[in-house]
Every structure is written in C-alpha cells, then in structure tokens.
Image (cartoon, rainbow, N blue to C red; front, side, top):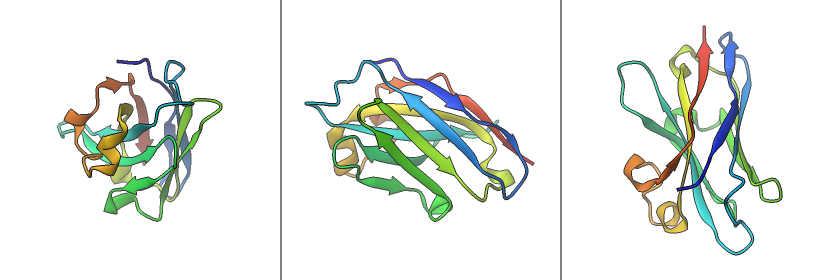
Length: 129
C-alpha cells in the first residue's frame, strides 16, 4: 500500500472543465511500472472505473462514457497522475478516487476492476449542475 493524495475537483456547470491530480510520492517510478487508475462513486451507486494509465509507457484506458471528454496523463518526475475532464455532464457527479495497482493489472485487462487495486486515495468531490 502506498499513499495517494488527490487534489482538484469542485463544482462546475454542465459543459465545464475540471482537473484532478493524484500525487504518489512513495512510488518508485524509475525502476517499476504501475497501473494507476481513476474511479468514481456516486451516492447509492457502486464504485466504477473511469480511466487508467501505465506509469512507464503511458498506455491509456478509458470507459466508453468518458472517451473523447476525459484525458488521463502522468508526470513521472513529479510522481503525479492527472485527469482532465472536459464537457462535464451532470452524470459525472461523484466522488473521484485515484488508485494504484501492479503494472500487470493494466496490460492484463483488469484495469477497471476495483479489487485489483491495493492503494487508494481519500477521494475528491466533483459536482456538475
């Protein structure tokens, strides 16, 4: 388990833009690749995957509902992952979490499964009205 610290989020009108960050100061990016993911959970609903990225090659994965609107990226030197959210919709309202998993989770097709991740951030609220 490693510490993950999210920041960003907030309230915005539909069609607006928000950006989230996830700092992972304990991850050793230099020699080890990881699968880093963004998830979200709306009240009364299960936590669902949004996007994921490998820290080394930067391979990206998205759920269909955010393709073309959200962009996941990472800064290896800063040990930080980002989620740029454009054209936000009310249905994007949720608490957003970042998570870390072994590299194999991304490349093996399990990036959208919450049980594959062993480290989670505290969550940050995104509200779209």
